[in-house]
Image 1 (cartoon, protein in one colour):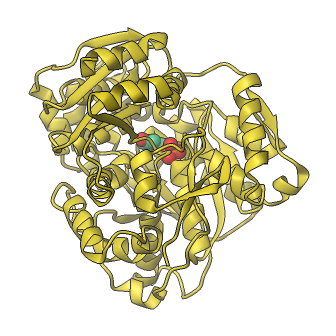
Image 2 (image 1 turned 180 degrees about the horizontal axis):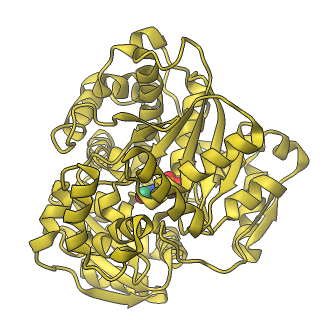
Length: 495
Ligand SMILES: *Cc1c(COP(=O)(O)O)cnc(C)c1O
């Protein structure tokens, strides 16, 4: 029996997993969700000895039931290969009393690689399965990391084009350089005059534009999304939580069945939602701790039940979490509303029209699996510094927000369970913030000089992704206003 998917805003129309991946976003603007979260059909004992790739198959086959074993294994082996700098793919490192799950060993040194190295394969396989002959145009809004990871994943993949929008001035210098130097004839990168929410809303509006969809079809194109709203990104992210738990068990850090907490530095709510799905699949996770930076709209939501995006947008040193509209939260809203699509639609309309909504007391009662926390800029840099001083381990600002929140949660709640921290980026990617957190003397230094200094003080090798951009040529210089994104897309596609 196939596991089918429906929109969070309409439960009537069901599609297969491959159709959901192809479409990205449902026609009604909702997000695709599986009819139910499948259980793992292997035991933790069995998972203990498995490689990352084997774990990926065990988890993903439960969700993507219309892919054959051969198709899925093929996608997995093309994704999790030597693009990663360790065979473990996602190593666990004990830092102080927490376990860091390092998700940044892929091509672009941020956790987006975990899903975006497989999405192009899932998507092109889905296209073949559904007899799609159109060229697929991937449209992506990025707060910095998705863009490069998607570009790297889709560059020169036959039958695809990719267009990435990022907020000018809203990403780190290394992130920007990574994107604007991207090779591949099918890639385009556009800096928009606005913030990430503007970029994301612009992309959503383009997806919902029926007239443009027809114009595109006439030219043999169709859109899809590489943003974390695509179920084809969410499912591969469930894998590493299952893998991490099995490795903790294998390494005898925990005992069989022992519950752990998981802290996730959160922006668009994709990564933490994957942890929630892992819990529902059967992984013994107690609390899901949602860590925000100073854009603490999610923290306030978990405190009060009110989601209110009407506030100042703050640029922080963890830019991939500078988000006021966390798209994937809609999937949680749908779940806690007892899969009531009408309620979901109602709340999302309020969010769109007024920028605010409040969930019901019944819905709030179902948020027990979650705890919210946030860290200020000072707490974030103090955590980078003190962790370095105590352990020699250097973490990036996103991970540091999670580490700070995790520590505060422990103290305040007296909850002593072991904690897994999703470590989402290499410190090399946010080098200026990281090094000045360690010592102010680096404040005026050149970013690339700091690269060698970080390598020296942390005894780690400079990642290939950073070496490459030192000398790479800039290939993308296009810019546009946030309200001209549609015209820019048409111009790029020649329609
Ligand atoms: C994208 C990103 C996040 C936020 O993840 P979400 O799935 O959007 O919540 C956190 N840290 C880094 C480094 C990221 O790139």
